[in-house]
Length: 202
Image 1 (cartoon, one colour):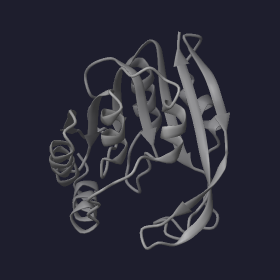
Image 2 (cartoon, helix red, strand yellow):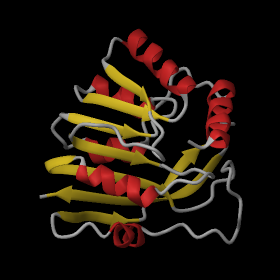
Image 3 (tube, helix red, strand yellow):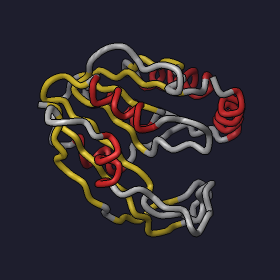
Image 4 (tube, helix red, strand yellow):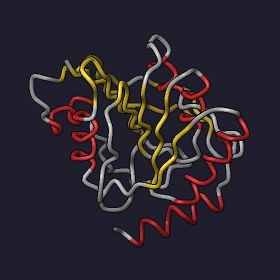
């Protein structure tokens, strides 16, 4: 357990309260044509994705390292009248039990030690046959990002897929880098690049 990471994310969600979080736009785009089923939301944060999915009849399990984030999501789900199972899970130590039609990893980035590739491999293994792993990563540095290193390399979707090395049971259905207009926490606007990787289990 990384105590520094826990302190960081507890402080973050204690001081950056989002009462009405919104869904990540790429997830909404990906999920739109899918039939609702079971979904695991990795690193649920303020809970915008989990609440949006639950409102559309998905059976949602949402996990985060932060107790503060998890508790807040439970309260938001109760107020919204939707069913979300929100759990405090340290993905560096364990992976949630169960199998899922969809596993969502939206911007699962951290400045702390995390074997992200192993987490995503576990996510792929947690899919039911026909299930989908949806990974959306940053592909550019927004003005409000905590990482402002101009030399930082954002792995491409193809590089992420190659690193996972999942084998023939999983098929890459999408690997691209679309751009969109985004709004930062202070209302700033910028064009950002998303790295989108969709992997289907056969």
